[in-house]
Image 1: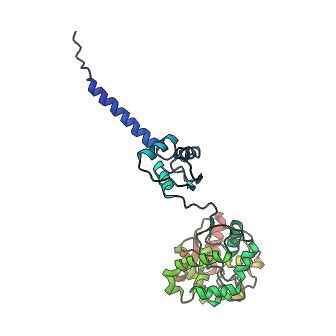
Image 2 (image 1 turned 30 degrees about the horizontal axis):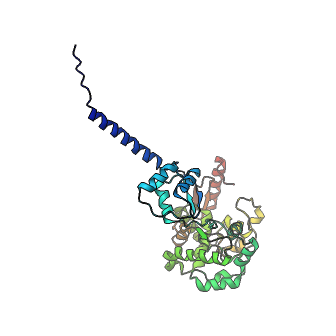
Image 3 (image 1 turned 120 degrees about the vertical axis):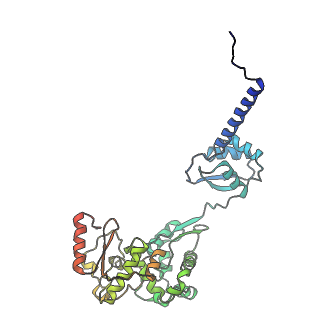
Length: 357
């Protein structure tokens, strides 16, 4: 009986074997040169000392789990044209491919292990920033606060920055620069940085960020920055902040006080997560807009640093006939026209268990 199966020619077998080998090499190449762990961007500090061989660099990177294979690192730097790999301290992560790691080594490190990073957050006070600076630098809390309170230094800054006016020198203002330090992340060479250097760098960024609003803000920077600081804490987004600014303006023009609880907290220098007694809400203080002596008046100055959202809201309020607003614990804000409607809405929120306190 004849066997009809055709035998594969030796040449074809060789081609197939070679193809499989090549495919395998490609798979191995892409596997061993890819990231150790996709998505993991946690910093890994690696020091490459002067005179370290490429082989030793590969071993170090493998030990630090920055690359998959020290052998592949050596192969890669031979096959792919590679410049001199520079010594230094680097920050890598497991989301980087071998190509990206080698590229960084070619460029050289600009990482400074002594670098001080200060992140100033929206809605925070000068006292919060002073604590942060004291924690991150070699300046004490008291020395930082003393610079913030220095009126002569403040006068120098007023002459330098257009958005700082003589209004911040009011004797009732706790910290003249409150509300004028733009919230952002700032970098400094080391812990020996001086407080005035920090302040100047932050104010430069404030100048940069406020430049697009300069024509409008210049009419009365202190008014707008003060209003912005209040709605920063009262609202959650630009839309409701614009509505709240409009309500504050309605209240003051109607012979009412602003009635903002957040100004009471600042007046008493208490944290927003603390409870206040009824008598404290009525304390006579130029910051406290709940006080009977603050009818038709703004706080004497800003009560925190504001986002651009709040600054925009202070400049462009929404017109309405509302006089009251209240928020629930979910951040929803309700607007009403009369005190009776306001009290009813508060009762509804409490009945649902959504009262913020």
